Image 1: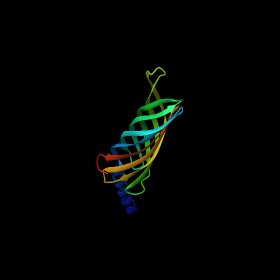
Image 2: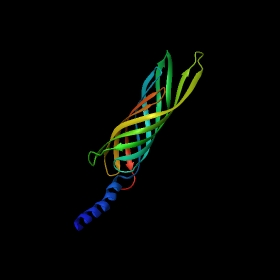
Image 3: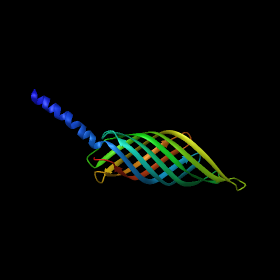
Image 4: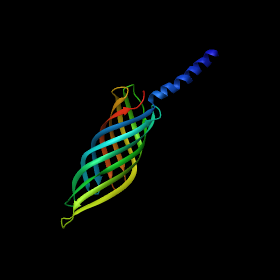
Length: 180
């Protein structure tokens, strides 16, 4: 019986150490390509992103991401329209590490978009319309550990809002603060 208590005590003492390895703050910088599909508009353009997150344990974390969407252009009803803007995400991150180097994950949460459409009127005057929207977003990706503090992430993300669907394929480099 004493051996059982000793084993239980060692397990309890060791568990926080295992969890602590995966806890902590991290930040990412990256870029990719996004696609906007909105009311006859359909184009792809480059994007840049910054992410801050916290891993509660090796399976669960939270993330906040800002994405800058650069100019995408398309013709809608014969008129050239250019769209750019920003997207903010607040998501939970569920991951299941395959081994010490590969960490596939899913993100789910809420996104807010601030998009600006620019065109010209029939008279040749510039016209700018802003569209603010929010909705459910999700992403699937994988992190690849380069060093104990540096990861490379690849991801597909989708934001579902009332009038627009935004898709993004991206790659980013993540720095983990503290020991891992």
